[in-house]
Amino acid sequence: MKTPIFAIVLAATFALAACAEQTGPKQAGGGLIGAALGGLAGSQIGHGTGRLAAVGAGVLLGGLLGSEVGRSLDKADRLYADRTAQQALESAPTGRTSKWVNPDSGHSGTVTPERTYTTAQGQPCREYTTTVDIGGRSESAHGTACREADGTWRLVQ
Image 1 (cartoon, rainbow, N blue to C red):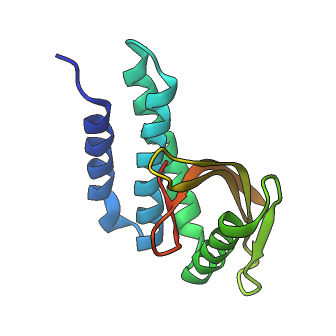
Image 2: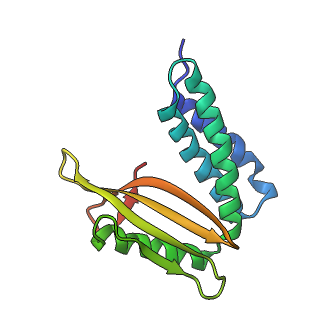
Image 3: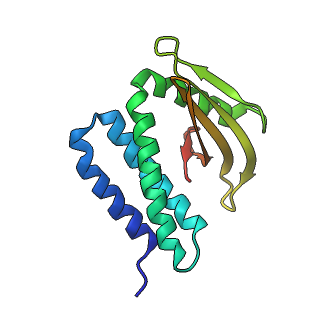
């Protein structure tokens, strides 16, 4: 019997959540989000028997990276990043990078829409790359967001 990839990602995410009591909320949240996204990315990369290993590696790596970024980003950083992402996804041309900087923490980042398309249901979506720079270290991620009926952009992948 095959174990569904989603079940593995979910189980690993809950296992990491159990550790959340020993970390701050930003670090725990970042770790959980990173683990889930890493597991999903691993499931897309791995094939056959190697798929399970790819998912496990994705969960671990995503959890570690997400935890590190989450530990360092404060609420104001996330507000700057979210506002920039919403604006970039809504109106920036494909390939144009939008930047944010929190003058209080010195943290910064970018959002670059890379591809725009419409789903079969007529929902506008954009693939994008985002970066976060904290203390001279930069982390990047690729994702897809779709516009909701209320005009906000929601991460779908």
